[in-house]
Length: 154
Image (cartoon, rainbow, N blue to C red; front, side, top):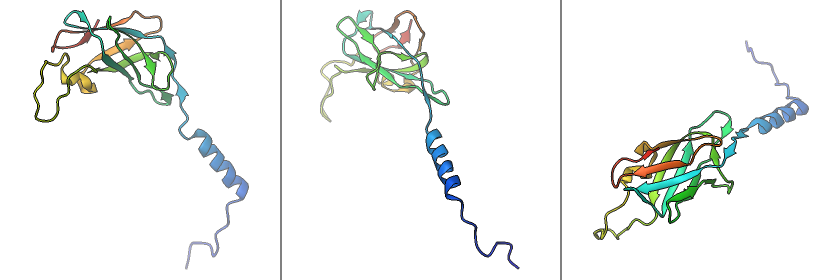
């Protein structure tokens, strides 16, 4: 004895179409996070650090698009953040901060460095533990790295 009907009833086309439209309309729906002007400076050993690529990666929030912001420091070590979409600013909240020295020497494999790096390699990843808080109307974010030592935002 079979518990299944002899033939399946087709789903009405209207119900199927509405279900697909609802799924498409809500798939990946996220609201954009508010961006605020943000920037600051980077010093290495108490001196302005030119050519440092600064990335601010916000902590995720469910249902909200929170883009990474970045900048490269100028001759005075200053930076102004913008998103990779070209919008000015950064998302409000706590960010993991990554620092990469664009002026660091990169010798060929097997070759020796002719000058020491300015930054420790750990700051090129979020595992470096550097964080900063972006607030609306907040003060400039100052990041000081004492040579190859520990970096801390002030």
